[in-house]
Image (cartoon, one colour):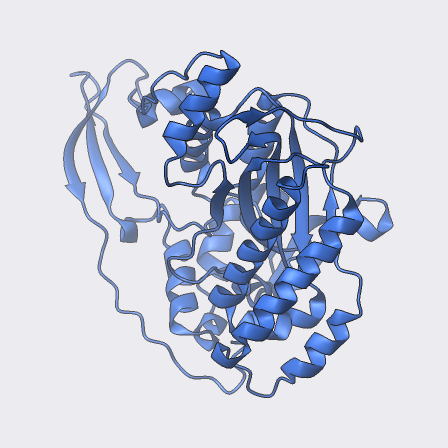
Amino acid sequence: MSVINTLQKEVFSHPCVLRFNAYSQKTFQQLSRCHTPAMGKHTYHCSNSDCRNVHYQYHSCGNRHCPNCGGLKRDEWIEKQEQNLLPTSYYHIVFTLPHELHPISLGNMSAMYKLLFDSASKTLLTLGNDEQYIGATPCITMVLHTWGQDLSYHPHVHCIVSAGGIHKSGKWVCEKRKHPTYIFPRKSLRKVFKGIYLKGLRALIPELKLTGIDAESIINTIGFKKWNAYAKAPFGSPKQVIEYLGRYTHKIAITKHRILSVENGNITFTYKDYADGHTTKEMTLTYEEFLRRFEKHILPTGFCKIRHYGALAPHGRITRLNAIRVQLKVPQPMPYIKTPIEIRLLIKTGTDITQCPKCKTGKLELVHSEPRRTFVYIAKKHAAAPT
């Protein structure tokens, strides 16, 4: 049995899952049933009359937190984003919440994550429209991550920001970098982000669940701290932007490639220790501790973790981008054509999923499709429930 199958059958279906809330239980149950008969299946026959092999293809769970799923969705999303790239430099900027806010954030994920998005985007738009930096509205794509390499709780947003932007007159303003490694000074990013977030947090306090939490004390503490916001060097080309997005957009708390072993009630995986020179190390956790950490990174239902702002804001985006390309005299992108899954897998892995795996000559023909089974999820209370 592979490591990922063991993770599904032993860890995600472990009895301690019943300690979590109903939504988290449902998520873990979906992960445990991914690519199993419980999720439904397609039944195929080989077209070769000498073979007539019967092949079953079990459905994936499709959950965005699943280590097995998301690869093809990621590839499709990236291809669509290629149409939004413009001939300008792009920068990588990261905004991180102070750890003192974690107790508030864990109990109010939707509100606090939305505030993080709003504050980070307003910071970038405020600095972008400053004449000494861009003097226009940049293109902004933001991705929420909530984890550290060791599965610790670490909410932050990764931002891709264009060095050029759209002036309020509609004219494209080319990049005017005064420094080769960043678009906005780190000090300005920290100061503006901190001010905007704290102002929004104070207004949000009456709507938050704060049982046993002294929010005023926390706000006073972080008000005197230096917040973590930084910008990395610009990407070398639009292709590198796409490659970066491919690594980060549909990433989950831990990928299957990092998991070394799942045995004897323990999970061993690799992680990078950034405090020790980005050294790759190994960590071993019990099933219970692994699930406790993993559960913190299950996003609220319906919450969108990838958002666009500025010139890439959804409303009127196509019209704006087309007008910019006309100004810059660059060709319009080709219309997006969705690639069938069998062709996408053939290009990516070299495997033809329409070919019979037994005789290697016949084609698989669909004869029956079985939908996923319906399950009733019951949340059981537990005195030591982590959430």
